[in-house]
Amino acid sequence: MQIKRDYSQPFFREPKRHPIRNILVAAIMGLLLGLGILSQWTLLENTADTIMGNAPTPTPLPSELATRASELMLMGDLEGAAELMEKVVSERPENPAYLYEYGSLLIDLTRYDEAYDLGAQIIDLNARDVRGFSLEANALVWQGQYSAAIPIALSGLELNPRFTSLYTALTRAYVETSRWNDGLDMAERGLSIDPNDAALSRAYAYALQSVAEYDQAVSYLEQSIEFRPTYLPTYFELAGLYLSQNRDQEAIDLYDRILSIEPRNARAMLRQCLAYRKVGEFARALGFCEDSVTNDGTDPEALFQLGLLYYRDRRFQDSRDTFAQCVEYDIGTYDLSCLYRLGLSHYYTGDCDTGWDFLQESLLIAQARDDGQIAIDNIRQGLNAIATDPNCPGYSGRLPTPTPIPEETEEAEI
Image 1 (cartoon, rainbow, N blue to C red):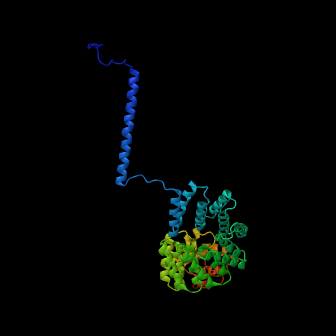
Image 2: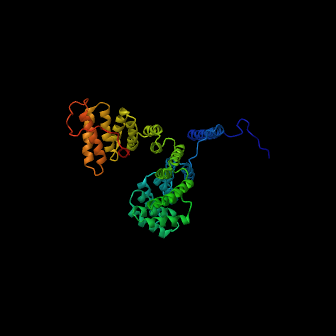
Image 3: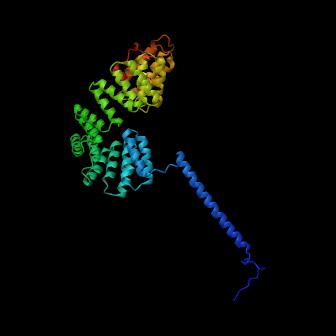
């Protein structure tokens, strides 16, 4: 049978139109098209950034930050290492290894309270983790709480008798509590476990000095520096020991090494100043003291020593200004020494009134101190000088025993 088609009608029947559905379809198609373009653009942009070297830097993992911190510590940048470890600990506060490493850095940076808290945090995580006991004990030792540190360190040894940092804490704690033999014994026991422990070698040297074994102490400080060549406190201790043995040039060389590691170390500059002064090279001493004050103008000891050198050279205006700074920043160690020399410097620059006032004030302070006799003698000589000086009218006869002011003794200046 043949089917006849009506060619007056379209081959495909036109569907009924639904306007709302057509709008939705168009919107979906537009959204899909936009997302496709955006994804392709982002891909192209990332590819271009990678080619041009502008790709975003991925956030480093805590383990990567800890590794970098260890590298900085070995280079001597303790501040930089601590900053990185602070980030590590903030991200991994439950990791005792990170807590211990950060706490050890804080002890090196004299941030003892924070180190102790990290030790307590480790113990909270695990009451048998010896690292927490070590941080607590060493932090207490450096805070001067020696008796409190001993039982904590001993408790740590019960958990792990091979953890040498505990022996370091016990060595110093026993020495400071006058148990010298116990201190020596603890250091020797620790070094038998790890003879390359820099902190323990340093502590052993400290114990040896307490029993006057200075040559051995030198050897162990030198050994500690060999194990940790960028840790500056050990250099200072060894240089001070060299000076006490009149090995002055070796001390000077050691301070030079410190400054090669940390060129703007004000404390090393001050110690170099004192070393050169000890050997009579006053011009070089003056230069280092000036550099020390330039780098830290608030250190009373540096200001005091610089003022003495100016005073020795009769540069009384400079000594006056320097002793005034010393009085401003001191909290009790050099206040009297700087104060009466400030009065003398004012007198020698022609200011009798101010000189007299400072000397009178310092005399009252000196008389109240058990160790003030040398200062009292120098102060009275200064007052006598003003009372007998015709250029200081109004002070004649104030003191009955006029004597000229002599050069100060070395004992009075140190």
